[in-house]
Each structure stands twice: as structure tokens, then as C-alpha cells.
Image (cartoon, rainbow, N blue to C red):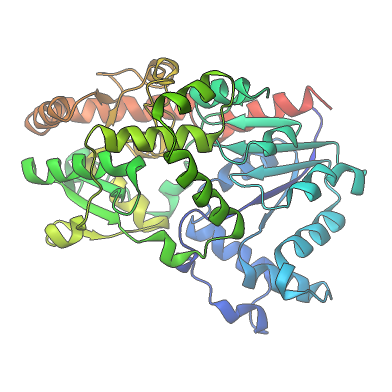
Length: 432
């Protein structure tokens, strides 16, 4: 397998305020661009950068750029003597970076930050680019799949959904970064773990109908168990300003909602598989069936057991110190029209098992391809089943420990970043 010159373009998961860099750092003479890149790497805020490192270990040349960190990107521009128009800084700098790096492969991970026409004409503008790759775990901007050479998606149902609109996606699951254990204190014995039962992540509050199920499920566990939670309950609309396209999308949703549900279904069956139609249909069904959105935060209802969200190394430290970790997908994961294809593959599956915490997770049709229920993880379908299994684990610590150990063995065997890097190279090298 020959080495490739790869440019990885990504962003930092979650709110950038958690990154230990100040907005005015690009005006400082004390920190250089590469020093800030090192700070990000050491903070483990880039949850996917281990793939880049493993690709480098396979003798590829790879460089990562964070398209949405303005202070970092502006510092790069400054160090390279560029004058940037502030209104269009993101695309201007990215294009300059592409021209400087001259990659054979452009690897967009998680988002496509370029405008549609720019992306469609990228290989014409830069003749050194041989392949464009896009890795996503969502049915995002559907045109993006047509604009790239390789579409890598994180779940089987996404493979199905993208194929339905004429694309050729490849299944590419998330993975675990074992370097995390070098940065945090991991208990040497399972019995030394600080927490019996935890949840770390978004509670579903302010997540709309897609995550309402998770919110009420977590509330149920708070009522029935002694679970401790570190939850994100921020209103994202207050953090990120809506773009013009997002505003148009909201107006379109209002129109679609006015249509009878049977008409929406006929349009979908006829072959229009747009994410907007599916999302609007499922949202309408949610309310028809009596669904309600939460109106009070878990942190306000249970202030002694629900804490502010954690990120980076703090996030991993809590998981590593948890005997049992809970996870619950959003209710969009199990949409009736796609449930037969399964849709599990969240990053949390690999992080939790990799850190040797006993994972209790909602089941999916493809779970057996990843972990063995009852041996490597514990799966549930209903909240009552989850509660019963959680209580059994708490009452049987040796069994809980065995599940955690087996889960870790499976992840270290099959779900590390190096496993995915080998798959990535096999896909790309086979087409260059």
C-alpha cells in the first residue's frame, strides 16, 4: 500500500468554549499555530484525531485543519502572510491551505464546510487532488454525497438511506483512541472505580422531538436509581446563529407540517428521501402520538445528582471511573421505516467499552456485528428492561466486571482507530 498525502478538514465536537485557547491568541506573539494544534491534540477535544495519527503510522502524510476555529485559522493566515476578508474568512483560508498542502486526498470528517459550487469544482481548481472523502454519521446535506468520491457513513441505516437517493456509501464505524488512557488516571482494579452508575452526555433537553425520549428515559432512571449524571442542557440556538439556509429550512418544515401525514408518506414512498421530509414526518407523528417536549432541565429537578457537562479528558475520566455507564440513542435512530436495518454505532459504544466500563445500551439490529449482548455489553429495549438489568449488575459486581473486561477486549481487538485506518487505506488505495 503506497503512502498518501492527505489533508484532513474537521471541527471540534461540541462547543468551542471548552478548548483551552483564547479568542485573541492569533494576535499574540507567544503562541504559534503549531503550538495551538498541539494544545488541541493534548486536550483530546478532537475526538477523531486518533484516526489521523494511525493513518500517519501507516506511512501516510496527513495534516489536520480545524475549519471553524477562527482564531486558529486567522493565526495560520497571519503566519503565511495572507490578508483575509472577514466576511468569508472560512472558505478563503481553507482554499489557501489546500493550495499550500497540495494533497492527493481531501478528507472531510463530520462536516462539509465549503459552499456547494466550490466543492463541486474543487478538483478542477486544484488538479493535484485525486480523491475527496467525506465521513459522516448523519444524513446531512445530501448533495455532499454526490460531490465526493468516497462517502463513509457510521451506521447501516445510513448506508441504506444514502443508497436510496442514488449514492454508493461505505460503512465506516466510529472507533476508540487508546492513547486516552495515557492522559487520565485509570483505576488499576475495577472495585476502585469511583462511581457505580453514570451517564455523561446530552440529556435531550432542548433537543427537540428527536431526543425527547432520552430525556424522559434519564428522568426515569433518576427516579428509580442512584445514577449520577453530567449533562449538557444548553440551548444550541443561543450559541450558534442560524444561517439563511437554516431559516429557509424552518420555513419549509412549516409548509410540510401543514400537509396530511398520508400525503407526506406518499411523497417519501415515491422516492423523495430527503432528510427534511423524513424529519418533518417523524416530528408530526411524535405529536400525533401524544409526545411532549421537556420544559424543565434535569439539573434543576435533580441538582444533587445532575452536574454540568464535561468534555475532553474530564469526560473520559468519568467514564473510566464508572463501573456502569448508560447510553440512550435519540428516537430518530429507530424510525419505523429503517428499524429493520439497525442503527447503532455511536462513538459512545467504543469509548465506554474501551475504558473498561460496563456499558448498558439500547439495542439495534446490527449490535451483534459490534458487541455480544450479555457478554461484552448489556442491551435493553424498554426502560423497564434497562432498570431490571442495571439492578442485577449493581447486585452482581463480579458479573459487571466481567462484562466490562470483555467489552474492552472486543474494542481493543476490532474497534480501535488503527482498525479504521487500515480500512480507510484499503478503500482509498484501491481507487487511486
